[in-house]
Length: 333
Image 1 (cartoon, helix red, strand yellow):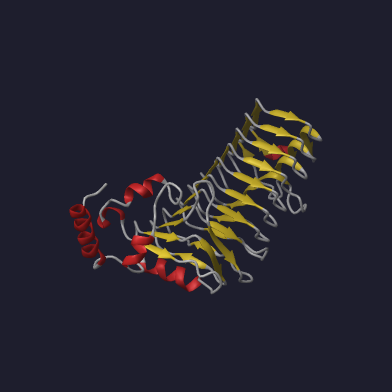
Image 2 (tube, rainbow, N blue to C red):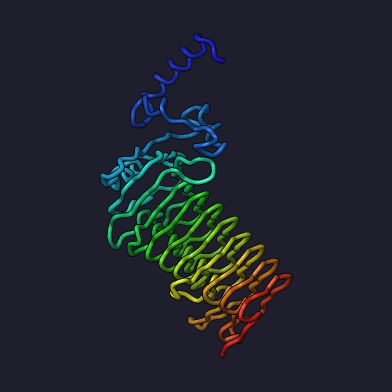
């Protein structure tokens, strides 16, 4: 236990640093907890660091009704590289799109160690809730929950390279949970994308991305798409379950004009269509794709379906468990 003398010294330092930081107020710092039930371990260790070493932390309080679009945008606009925006537990409502327009920011939410406990709820028609803007680098999204309210447009759109998304939920969009467009070198881990009208995680012209230790389930179209020049995508240890349940896609994973896709250690089951589908609507090659060490079972279509097989070159599949599907490897056209 700290002595009174040590405590007074710490209080004095906090007062000194308050003058050169931008936070809601001093009580916000005192009230915020960074225990294991509220933030990752590295955040807990940062609590004791100096302001200079960890940047500034700003807080978004849950208003549980009023629109918070401008409030979150204001926190981003005040921030600079290395800063953290912390989303308090509770309901947050957004009628517009919040733009991450600066590099090097972290947006982190309250959580219980298993799931986020902050709930960002979309209320606006025809808008995404959160955009990582083009040209923005090294954004970190951690423990964020976005509910799209079954409204059009994706929950989050990523245009910035080197974005990392951890431990977050994206659900109930009538479009995609996450839409990745011309954004490369992404790392997506511990994410759940579910109950979306079309795709759980959608990629277009986005290369060298890794999706690992995630879940995509019960989406109206694909759980994951690798399309339009999205090369060298790694999908590793992802549970892809009961997707295409509205027949708005081609299966569990859809691939079109993508070289070097690597699908491994996944479970793909009970798809309302094919588990993995080379759709090839774009009439462009899919070269060097590999599918291995997966469990592909109980799908209404084929385990691996290849449309226009002349476009699929240097394809390899091995050590996959493929049982209870309508077919194993199927070819069309």
